[in-house]
Length: 220
Image (tube, rainbow, N blue to C red; front, side, top):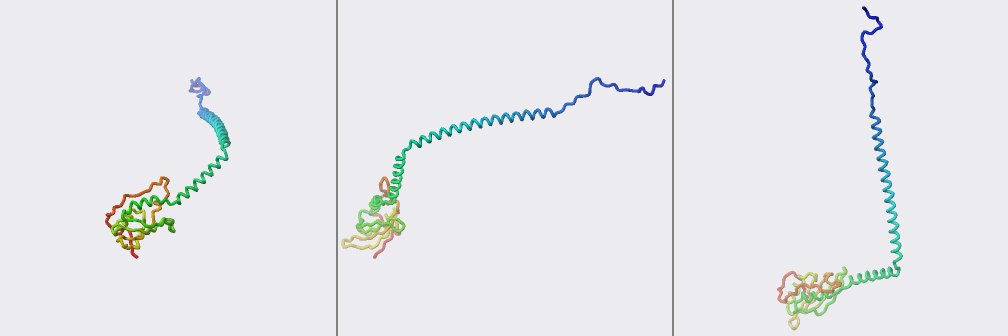
């Protein structure tokens, strides 16, 4: 028996459940962004509050320092300040005078050290040259040529009496040797010292042999 044309020959049964539910990730992403935004907003609020508090603390500290400075300035006596200024000016002037003062104790102590006992100084003059260095011109008497040579060697070895030139060497009637001495001095040798202690090296013996090239000598 043939089926009527309006009756399907097959069919697919439909499920009883409705269409599958699809979930979108857009809602989750927007929620995470919102959480981050609220956290950032809270952080900004906390930082702003901290800056405000720190500013108030600094302002209070500055006000206290200003008050302390004002009290300190008010306690200063102008007369006392002027006295300190005058004292500083006097000390500065005194220092300048002392720096230009010639102290001869060290030089005389050096002469007593480097010159043998058989050599004596008769006249001595001290002046400043064009460069401000002290220079000396002296005359003296030596017992003999060996004593004069020993004095020349000792002066050259010490080094603080510079460019020493022995001249006008003469033999006196008593067989002593007369001489003239010209030299420049190390400025430190005549510089003022608060202690006033002379500086001198080891003494020179009368028997020191003469050596060539220690000091210049010339005859008239």
